[in-house]
Image 1 (spheres, rainbow, N blue to C red):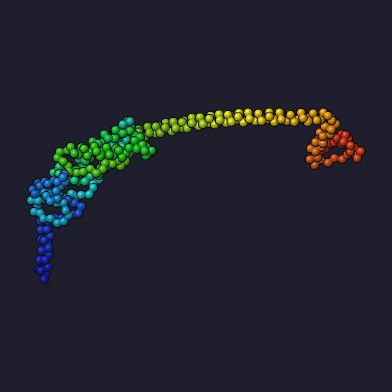
Image 2 (cartoon, rainbow, N blue to C red; image 1 turned 180 degrees about the vertical axis):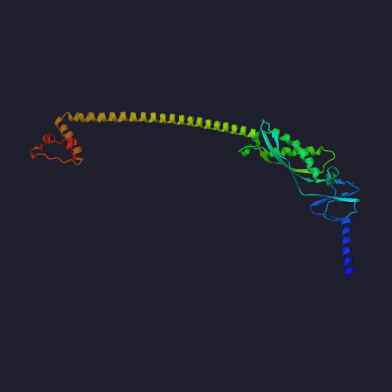
Length: 315
């Protein structure tokens, strides 16, 4: 019984070793290049794409495959998913002379596994080549002003255009390499923009000058509007006063005409006029709750007004 168990274990180990030596697995997110004595057969291309029916040494579909043991054949597996490569932060110069510290990144994927194997062989070498190419596209920053990279107004920012130019520059640079790298650049982006100390002081000075210019413009606009309001108010004042004076003159002239009519009537009977004036004065005095005492002998009109109390006798 013990010998049977040992034999079974040994058989399992042998099967495992043989599977490892003569078979390999391609995952769903991978492609593989199967080389024979470190050489790979190139695939055939159709309309610029790899012909799936004649892939050469490429294994494009996931699943198990057969191979000869090492060192006859080797398997080089490459991911099909996007790769992200971050560049180191570097100080660069803008078009208007400002220094900025820019940290960029690039997303890429393997487009032609055979060309990638021939030119780069692995992901680490590809990352090194892309690092050097990213430094070459730093000249794109020099085509733009500082305010097109850093601004509180979103409409003045040109970051999307900068990234598009960097993507085009890097793609054109890759298309001129020989042999071809077999990779495709999906996106070049700017992850971070920082300012060195020298640029920070210049930015603060520029912001201060801008704020002072805006404040001066606001003050000038306020003074202009105040002057316009004062001029309008003075004009309205003159118009109102002129109208009031004309109206007052008209009322005064009308009053003079009425007075002239009354005087012509009073001239016919002066005593009656005096009596009316005294009556008016009496009405005004009595309207303030004034109390006075007179002699019964002074009830005649001429006696009443001679006994009227002074203003200090009012209660």
